[in-house]
Amino acid sequence: MERWASLLERDPHRLTGLLRPSWAAGDVTGLNGRSRGDVKSFFQLSNAELARIASGSWRVPLRPAWQVAARIRNVADPRPEKLLLVGVMVLIAGGVGAAQWLG
Image 1 (cartoon, helix red, strand yellow):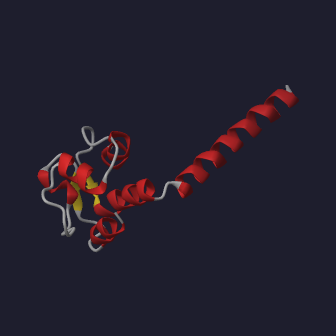
Image 2: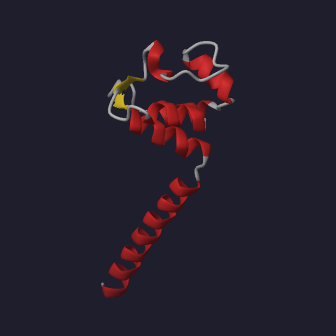
């Protein structure tokens, strides 16, 4: 997955169509085809992981390659994404707690 993300980042502003056969852009050695099924099988992705990479593609079918690469990296190593989520949740909980304490 790291190689896939790196290949997309070579041309970070190129638009990648997530619903088209070219959505898995890049020459990833060993990838037999570019369908969602081929990508899912090759990278051993679950339905949820594949959805995280291609989510929202029916609303916005073209995305910059850098954004798709970031999604791929988040699936490959979700720790930074989880830390961000935890940070946001702590801020919200702190804000609610402060509002209740002041109210």
